[in-house]
Length: 118
Image (spheres, rainbow, N blue to C red):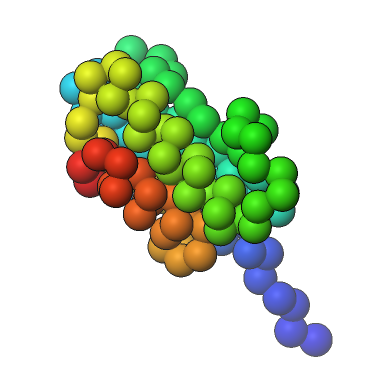
């Protein structure tokens, strides 16, 4: 019997490969995304200092009655506003091995529309 590949294991493999190539700095932090079945989380990370500069998630936002795509867009808007408050305009986008589709794309588009450049 052929076994199905573990999707999360493959995602983590892609994530490790991507992380070997990209890094965030204080001037251009890494916009890291984590997606679970219920929530989505975004962080601005300075990898040189090992510090999270700003974060946003569906747990912070009051978007419980919205769809998951709308929730992701709200998180993208919130992380862009948090970046503006810290005078950050450009970031390195880290999709963490997820496909650039659906909630990940909605978050990225909302962040771009609200002033983040990547």
